[in-house]
Image (cartoon, rainbow, N blue to C red; front, side, top):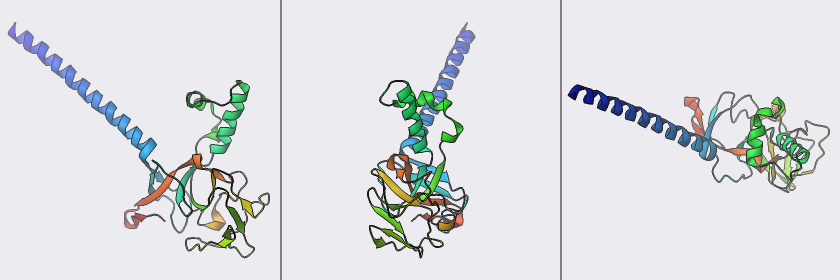
Length: 219
């Protein structure tokens, strides 16, 4: 009888220990998700559009919480944001709504066309909302008539889209971005990206953590 009691007690303790491990794991996952969503993230640079400041396969720590863009910041942006929001707006019209709620968008996410999936770009903020950007024939960038001193830029800056006219006034609540590698960057100079809504910014790149021999702040 005494041995049976011990067996039952042992089984109970094992079940409790398993539950504690599962509970701890769930809490850890929730905390990790919250940190990744709201505080900071680690992203990988794909391509050479920010060369020589950043290179392909560099890893960056990006801060999110309370971020407000400033001219010169290196940011990570969702390049499909505007097209996806236009798609949601069309769905709202079809459903007789003013706009889709967060839950509506979450439910529609699995039905999104592949072209509207999030694709992140790393770029530099060149101009802020309502500022005017101009590109001169000799490759200089002017913001509100003042030439930018761009020690970070590689190559002369030129228009890359004949449908975009300069001087250009940045949309309200948006920023104008360019890659540092000016001859090899798709950015706000292209009409299909254009000025980037501030809501499309994931956050600001703060530190390069890979490769190890290039660990540094990013600026």
